[in-house]
Length: 244
Image (tube, rainbow, N blue to C red; front, side, top):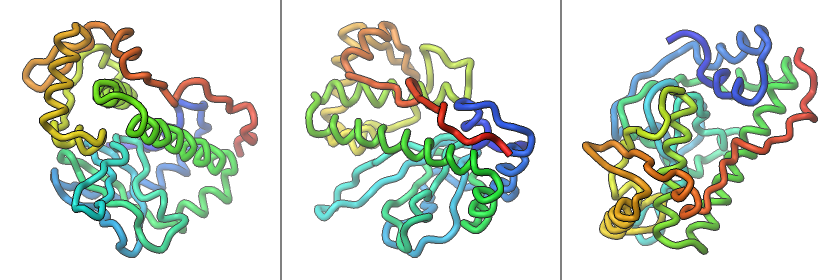
């Protein structure tokens, strides 16, 4: 695969210059294939390389004191892995492949050089981080204040939206690619409860399921049920510095 997946992600926000594209391609000069279930980074390990997801789906998670797992976010092509490595000596989260995938490792010094030479890319990295922070805040609020049905519905919408960012042909139907246990670890529910909520959402005519695929049959109703906010909308990027 040529080009930069991260550049494609940022291109959804602004039109990048050829120089900015070329700079970001430096982050993805090396590729590493990984198998489903492989751990890329383990919580509390010494931080090292950062990564860009080029193919596949991964997740970041934390292990709680009682031995349970909390999934923090799902990672898709174009996402940065281990962004927290810029600030911490030890990794605050574990990153695991949910499918066979390809990642591109790069050193923090490479990103530092790019940010120094291209201030607008540095500013876009701040924007990217804030989008992720807002999405995590939404999930935190959902865990504490919304129903089980709303939490599961929100995961379905977020998965569809993130998958569609990399494949514009996806509209209402997509392969979910998550187990009920994984949905449960993202929503604070048991797999049994997730199964019950999926059946309820389906019985209410909001989705249809077949052979691992989910189809939104009433997307507006599903969004209402989820109290979902798309954090990639409503951005104000008028303050960005000029491209170099």
